[in-house]
Length: 366
Image 1 (tube, rainbow, N blue to C red):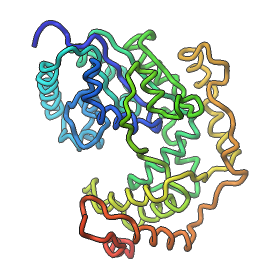
Image 2 (image 1 turned 90 degrees about the horizontal axis):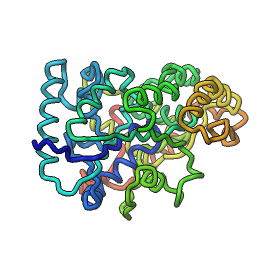
Image 3 (image 1 turned 60 degrees about the vertical axis):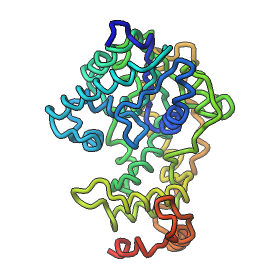
């Protein structure tokens, strides 16, 4: 590799989770060739089926073999992690060697925010990328904590989490560092410098063209193209939430097999057919949950948004009902989900087969 670094700048989009990262990553992936013509490169790297480039997380995390990132990439211990890191470095060397007229490298993974809690991990990531990059920008979105928590709840359900419906707040409060935005900002600023940090408030009312992708392109200084992916990882409405919650008890992931394809396909269909909003919290509960982060949010505002008047986030909670929506499963809802699944369109993987509940009944009857 030549002594000249191929990129003047690297934009690291670190999330946070549940701020439309999948849509942004699909946009970068689908428009990779068009972006490259403008000197902006989104690397293939390990090029797994996931758009989130979690290989960059796995090479610096202190124990990736205990997470899905490591399992997906075949990392089982420190030795295999080191081997994977060397292999990724070689692949990127070869990938970047063939580029012409590039200026900016852009890497996107919400797992940077959610998995890298140690400053030494972030420092190791910077050291790994400095082989190809001269300067860095860190782009991060922050979403009001109660909204993020409810969206995360749907995601955890889809992943077969056993959510405790009789105490939603306990479920939401079990990872306090996840919502400590001031600490997240400080960790990354300590490594890359405050001048490298570019923080945005996740606020659909402020997006140009009512589009998160448009807002991201403005924030990152990217040209915007017409290929914009459909929404991914949407939250569940009441019917979808209740169905998948019951599914997690009746048909959990098989022990020892974290990637049950049949179950994953069922969850994907329900998530698509029954996307929407579900409010298992009352307005009072949502406000109480949000208020515990007042000091952290004010510290973040002072550091990252000094021109923004306090409070940092809109405090309109009118979307929440006065009383939390029922947590009791409804028989008619279950029938409606069954009918929708029965009539759903065949997927590309099964073009000659009419989707049918018959595939799922053996497990649903357990």
